[in-house]
Length: 440
Image (cartoon, rainbow, N blue to C red; front, side, top):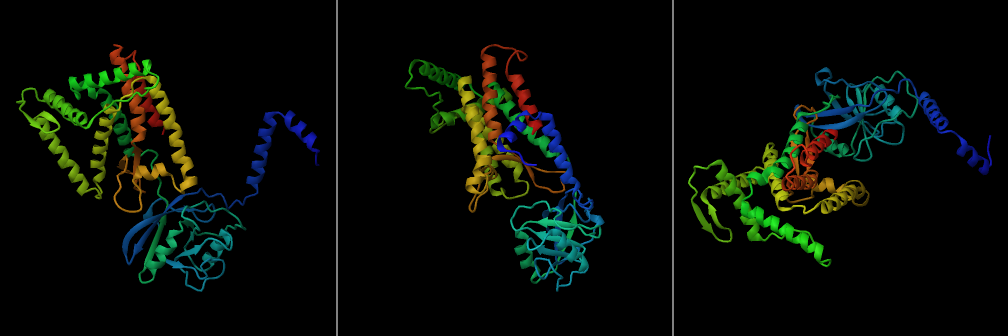
């Protein structure tokens, strides 16, 4: 029955919300009930391991179909299958190439996935890999007549697989092994990343207790106080920044080293030497500086090694502690504006930039992704230790620095206001920051 437009508006306006919710569930149930009972397999993340002339190579990631056989979780429960391209390549009709006992490969398109699976199975294939028409992989739906006779697994793989396997299979024997290992809910690498991010902010907040000389502390506080007073008296000069010269920056690093080493080695002889630009420094801190240079050079030489993430994390943590000491927020007003702008900045560069630049610029920069030359990843990373898929878990520097600026500010505020740990802001912000990472 059709309603005039005016009546339709009055009816929809008077319908109770609960009725609309119940109606939506009923429609979903009817739509779901129309699916074949043989089309309810759980979608699995499939690992496709490749052997070339008997040597194990890399692996591919794919998604299983919601029909056909499911993949086992352990690789020792499935055999290696020779890879064979269907002919025709779309896999929509009987193949002239021998598919018996193989993992058949066909490209997406020209017919539905169920038809491709039936054709591959009728040719004797033990599995079907559907090569997508783009690099992303998608869930294989059940378009077509699904029958219980489809007993082979069906997996979708990225578009790049076609060119890579075509080149390799031209003069080499390629075998594939398909299984679906389960991923751990929480990898131990996440615990390490949590400890590094929270520990970096905590250390940077307390660093001024043992890492900054009294002269440097006084200079930074006077600079901050002067700018705050200038901002209140001169509306044309409303810039709350800390002016740090090259000489002052170098002195800051050496003064920090002097105070740290002198506290840890009170009985050590404090011989000094005068250097150009930097001025007078202790021999002990100069030795620490040389060790740091050696460490940085060693990491640069071995930056492509599998263990380079250790040096990268150490250098990154040291840099962030340094930044959180040099870039100090003068008041909560600046902190509020900075964090609000950073919030919208992240939204644009992570979620909106892919629509403009075809990729997330923020993620590409954080990973150090580029088309040539060298790249410096702006993140901390730890390899996944118990994840069968391998890879790394990562945290960008911005996720530590921006909250760290506020947390270090609250520590200085509590100290200057002579607030106890329980009544101040610092402890509660640290707890909130730690729990916030648990939510991610």
